[in-house]
Amino acid sequence: MLTSAFPTVDLCHKPTPLERLDNLSGDFQTNIWIKRDDCTGLAFGGNKTRQLEYYIGHAKSLGADTLLTTGAIQSNQVRMTVAAARKMDMEVEVQLEHRVDRDQVEYHESGNPFLVKLMGAKIHYYAAGEDEDGADQVLFERAEVLKSEGRKPYVIALSNAGSPYGALGYVEAAEEILLQLKTIKIIPARFVLPTGSASTHAGLLLGLRASGCNIPVDGICVRRDRQRQQQRVLTKIQSAAKLMNCEIDIRLDDILCDDRFLAPGYGILNAPALAAIKLMAKREGILLDPTYSGKAFAALIDCIENGNYGMEDHLVFLHTGGAPSLFGYPELVAE
Image (cartoon, rainbow, N blue to C red; front, top):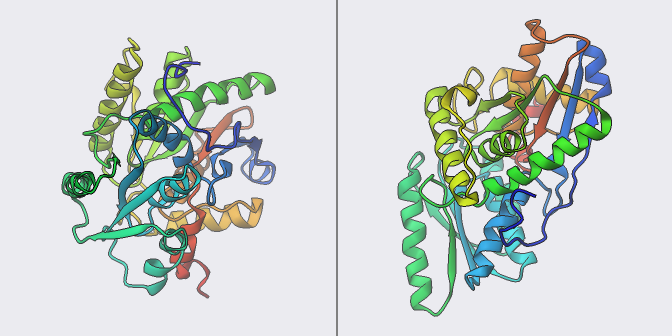
């Protein structure tokens, strides 16, 4: 395994299923597969479970007893960090950023923030919406306070400043997926996934290329425009490759980012995502989320409808989870 040298903890149900969406494949006359990383276990599951296995493995190797992280009000990262800390018998403090302009009480009280409170995390709030460096700086300042109190904190930073241990979880996942594809004798035309903080996108692409697989990986932008996201993914790939002591040349033109479904912005539902969420729920009984997987699946549908893929093609969609945030968007079921 490419990441076997790194310490990890056991949080994730692996391997997660890789299954064909039979109903939607029939509807669109192609072959749509879904990698069910919404089924990783741990407090509703999601892609962060794989990442946290490496972050917490590193934290434990340093003797840490307290985790700190930051994210939006409906952050899956925050919810799963709290759950992982509880499973590992660690203390945890989280910072919720006012990143999304939504006044609905459900957004602020239901879904992920409800679960964070249920699990008893200490919660701080950060008023700025788009200030990764500032949000991280507050975490590091809080860590210093905890150190003065005798704690041993470990910060899981939001920006690209820290070492991307989380990306290693998707380097490992790439090997898992390739083994599953080999077993069922499928060679996909491409992979499709949401790209935000970029650890999942960077790790998967690095893992595939390091394994000799050149299948394209389409990252559907959920927070930044295409150019900025490409650079973010590249930076994270380079940092992860350095961690692994892996000499592999992944260039900017191999990093595919599509920002056509980003507007009106991070965490704000748009019509294609709404349609994609409802379609997946009604045709397959699988729940996508408004911020990440809903927009990514909308992009996949658009590519099929534009005639880019046909009956002989196989597409693999990476479901990154996020179902709890659905409860923060009551308009999803408004008449």
